[in-house]
Length: 114
Image (cartoon, rainbow, N blue to C red; front, side, top):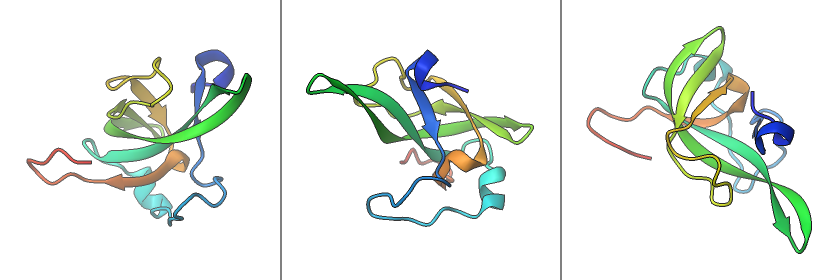
C-alpha cells in the first residue's frame, strides 16, 4: 500500500471519512468486497500540497477500473488524473480494499463512463 511518507499519496478509508461534502451512503460491504473486472470504483486519495508556504494534506476522489482481485484486495488501473499530483497518472495500478470504495458503477456494454 502506498503511503504519504514514501509515495507522496495514500488511500483514504471511505468507511472512516467524516461527513463528506454532499454526503453519500456507502454501497453495502458485501458489494464492495466483490467488485467484478471492469467495474469502475471511486477512491479518495490523500496527498500534500503547498498552500501559502505550508504543507497541507488534501484528498481528491479519483476513478479507477478494476482489473482483478485476490485475497480480499482489488487491483485497478487509474482512470482520472489527480489535479495537483503529477506522479499519479491514468494507467497507474492501485491496490485497494473494500474499505476504500466510496462508490462504484458497472458500465453497460459499449459505454465508457464515468
